[in-house]
Amino acid sequence: MQLNRLSAVRLLALLGVAILVSAIPNSIQAVNAETAITNYWVTVNPTNISSSMYTPVGTNWTVSFQTLWSYGDNSGQTIRNATVTIQVTKTSTDKVVNAFDVNTTTGQFSFNYSSASADILKFNATKLVTQDGTTYTPVLLIWANGFYGLQSEAVTVWWDTFHVSLVNYNTNTLGITTASVNVTYLLLPEEGLTLPEEATYSHQTFFPKVVHGANVTINGVKAEESEIAGTYTANSSIWLPTAYLNVKVSQEEWVTTTTGFSFTHNANQPIWEYAVVLGLAFAAVVLVLRLVVAKKSKSPIAFKHSNFPLFGGILLASASVISLYWGIVGLDSTLHGFEWAPLATLGLIAFCFGFAGAIMSMRKKNQSLAIFATIAPFITLVLVKTSLNAYQLATPWIILAPSIAIAILSLILITNSDGQFTKSDLNNSA
Image (spheres, rainbow, N blue to C red):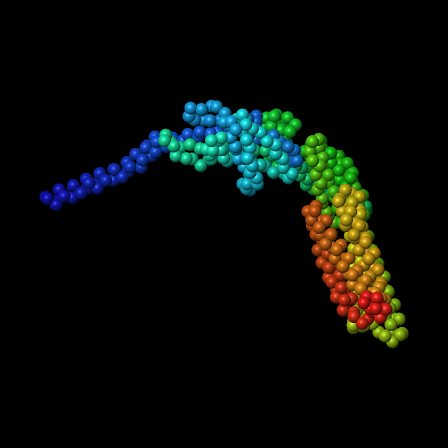
């Protein structure tokens, strides 16, 4: 009987402990809720009509804030002559891109800001230092009656630009390219953007995703907007095997944008293929005639050291012809609005200089000039890659890779032709 009583007492004790333990979290929560009162003594809020604004790239936008005491004896009064640190964050990456200090003067302050690229930037106050040196930040500090710190509402500004996408194209007519492009705003969501009138550069309340009524040109030809809003079509004259399109979009108060596209021209390509075949056939005929002459003179042509200048010259001439092609591409594209004048100029110069070096090499004269001329095709190829990258166009490695290989082989053969050039050239070089 005594054992049973002892067990009952232990059971009651354990039950009581369990009840106490379960009640402790609720008691702690109640105490915390009663004592942890958050009092932000300082607030920095925008005075603009909207905390979000929309404007074209490159436009200065004025952002305004007001600083107020929000607790204590000065509650509701402005904070004069304090220093506020504004942090600028790129919303797409949540990365801080800038930070600067602004004086609050009478309690309100403003600043101008601009972005050269399409970005959504957020402006937020991260620190306020009063005249007496007291610093307030979003990090809460302990105070007698709770916590205090800085509370700020952010301002978001959209700096937008045009986005051009290729809808379709037709290259089945010789020398003519028909292309249709779709023009939209780059940053806007598909459903568009609604803002108060004062929050936009042109006092519009709604911006659709598609751009209607813009001035669009394709290779310098004005494009007409179709029945589908935002879709523009134009015909342009192109005689290259690859069609390069230069699309410019402009609108009142917006910065003009340029977008490039490239694709194979189905009707033009066969003509260029025939030209290449005829060129190779002509080169083969010349080589056969050279072999016949060499056979009659009993000095057959073989791949040996004495013939390095000949083979090096032939390869250099081939590389120079490729430079001529890229020079023509640069010239034609420059006329259509591409900024490829350097490619056109250096491509034509590289052809002339490289071809002159090839002739010197095949005649075994002026080795120094021939060696120096092998650099010209490399310069052209580097400029081709740079020009295409500037418009984010695909690099035609099927052409560039063999061109580089040909230029390298010509350089190797000509530089290893010591003793094969005329002695007068060696004397002049010395």
